[in-house]
Length: 278
Ligand SMILES: Nc1ncnc2c1ncn2[C@@H]1O[C@H](COP(=O)(O)OP(=O)(O)OP(=O)(O)O)[C@@H](O)[C@H]1O
Image 1: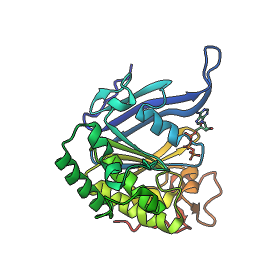
Image 2: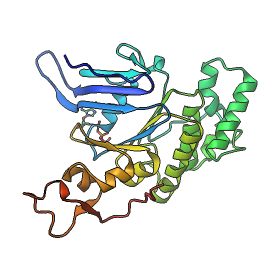
Image 3: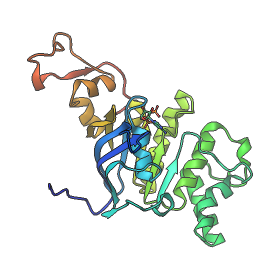
């Protein structure tokens, strides 16, 4: 059997398979098909792909919310098979941050710290630090009912970061917001993850958002991982027509007729990606 190296630091997904509707008599439908992916400590990786390609299923399998039908998920060299969701030390953030309506902003952010038994003074300090990091300094006493959608997601981000998760899993955290707000928040999310040194996997179907947030972007289609690269590399050298198409790139006129075009064929950018190369 081939020896597969598992890195010591960060997330290592190897040949992960997620199936739905499997039983003793049926194989079930494959949502994630032998995906391997590494996320090194401090790195932000976006999972990008069309609706139904298996992004959320892969994220949920990493979280431990969905069982693997094959392959493995390891963190810092430890195989997580059999380790339940709450013992993985991961944070989760979904589209609707689902704040606790009866807690004020500060107590929402403090939630995970209370569960960890962090003393009150230290909690208050950490809450203030995180509210500052997400641009909501001074909001601790506010009722969550008085917040806008964008502010709610900022609080949800602060809450998920408070216990210092060793990996933060974000599933379309901005998709309930309107486009302009999404663009601004994508920049802020990146800055916050960077400032807190958080290792993260960010699911999105929006390539602009993926390029803004991530160090590397993993492009998925029909359960398979097609390419994982830094945004500038993806844009310059998409590995296949499918990747180019999904990134909003198109072949140059006269170059896109398939046979014989070979590797020399380079797509031209036809949409704005919002990525400035820095
Ligand atoms: N609980 C489930 N039971 C059965 N099939 C499911 C379940 N969850 C997802 N699927 C199927 O698995 C495939 C992958 O779904 P998944 O939600 O992972 O994709 P996605 O890329 O995250 O899509 P979206 O962006 O629309 O959320 C789809 O065909 C979906 O219908």
